[in-house]
Image (cartoon, rainbow, N blue to C red; front, side, top):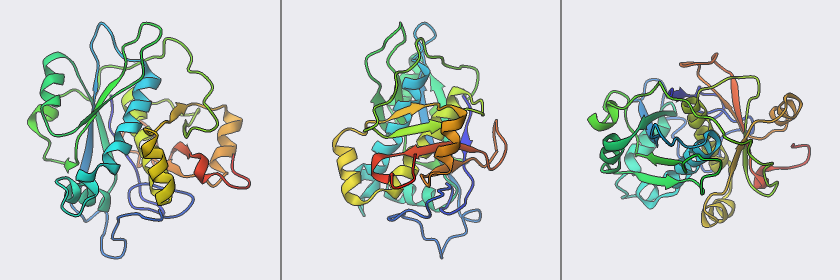
Length: 264
């Protein structure tokens, strides 16, 4: 698995071609994103050697985990126990790092404050994905039980091609021209979900949350990707710290509530 960080453009840490989010928590005029203390959002995926999850399931579960944390009262209430950490993270570069755990490592990770999400029932012999998301931590201040976990060394595959996504469900489209490890793609999917969340109004956010954050992660054709990038939907651009070139477009966040005339 590899880490993922995104470069700033129209909103701090993440880029959205539609402009800054309606309800972004950032202190734009007060904060230099690079000078601010840097935080990272840790995500840990449960991967047992004998029964790893399917790649798409892991990507979708990671994206939903980010949304669940962003909407959790512990991260949104003025006196929430995670609120200050989330705000500090969002005022700097938006970094997410995905690590893997198995056996006792996973049990130790589950004992730390965070939220575990499970994927759907497994198909094709793969285990259902489990991803635990933790409140942001300082870039150089990881809890020791998370710092010891591996970032690289395991990748994931889909036993069967994922089905065509429901057009009524949000879709996070991955750039078909960029090869990413599963961990990198999980972090990028999380970035895309976060961009969509920022762009939605309160009613759309509430409806998405009430439905359990349904979403799909898919890879379009090159032609479809070109239309998506030009559609005005939110686009994630990577900072280029790992795996891919700086400024690369990695994900288009296609939420039905964000579609308009001329959008794919």
